[in-house]
Length: 66
Image (tube, rainbow, N blue to C red; front, side, top):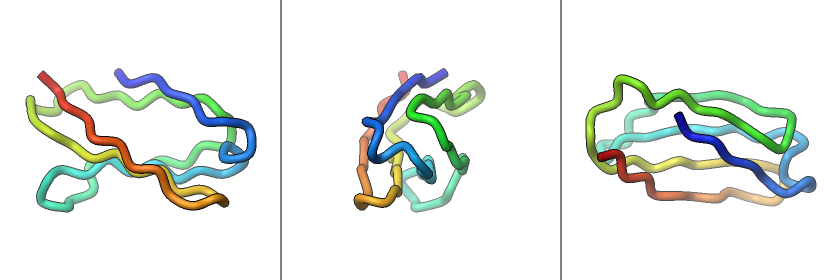
């Protein structure tokens, strides 16, 4: 499980997408508050990319699941 938060300006409406390294969307959710929880159970070990798109642009984070 991944917990996270955004600053108040970016949190009004945020689209979260988790990608594998082949560019496939594995998880997609929209949040309207500044905190979120993503269930990563069942994902194999590896490297993933989490993208958060909001009114101010896009944030990208690399995740490593061991």
